[in-house]
Length: 346
Ligand code: PLP
Ligand code: COI
Image (cartoon, rainbow, N blue to C red; front, side, top):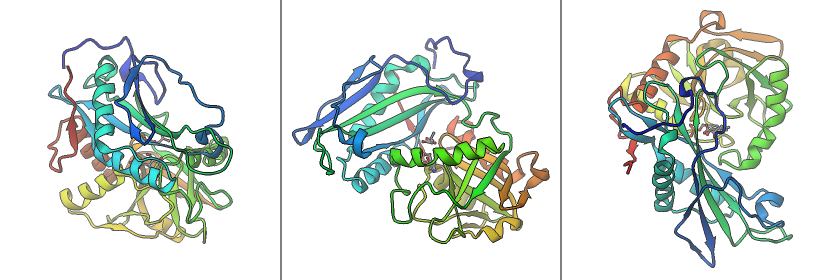
């Protein structure tokens, strides 16, 4: 699309926040959602006893908008994010945001910030961050009556510092990000506060992040702090954990479809024991921010499992998945599954 872009070196940005033109806010009050207002203000008024800040009634989402090779502006599977925000809301007794409001917010906020959409070829994207928070003042622990739904955007590059280089993961046994029957399967803001300890430990020991184990038996792989885990077994099977304490990743769901339906690979979603780490040929972490980042090393207790090329480079299967997914997102490959939602730019 030929419109002026902001003066940003889009090809060299990391995963960071940039001030943009506007965000959009919708308020739920007296039992109904308002029509939403675009605002250039980067702050908002918040009652001092709001449930979101005292009792964690806060959930968010993350999705990306791309400029395709033929100049369209597209979001990747946004209705899935709307649905997941609704399940987060339901589980945390918050007011769900109807899909029509979610899509209205997306169209309006992207249009208001079109110059921040990274141009095709920069390998960057516009990250969209929807947020739902309880706004009612109360000191008793009960659900808020009033809510705010906010959507902000920022241009982003790769989530992990060194882009499509292999990452090192540390398996931890004495830290959890979520409880077995807690909020691990929804995008509760508090899950990310719980994950800071793991991330800090991993970073101090020279790892990218941690891999959590199931919090009951500490025997099965769960996921990483910001992404799902995917392994490629030595026989070529795509294997990813089934667990009710991990986030159902839209990226992982898409990769499973690509692997099974487009590539004809065997795909398994099942509990994966740590004892199987030696059977992996390749591994990756997948998510909106992480895309599919290759994992080269996994340390569990005293053993370091080195994957493809002694952990030095991405294996062929992870690379093929990455190329297919990003190829679809940038409109370079056919969108066979109808995953792209076009945003009309005014
Ligand atoms: N797991 C966690 C904990 C996440 O925060 C994310 C990111 O959204 C994912 C997995 C990947 O989910 P998705 O692919 O829907 O972005
Ligand atoms: C995303 O991938 O969109 C996420 O929300 C992960 C987050 C920790 C950046």
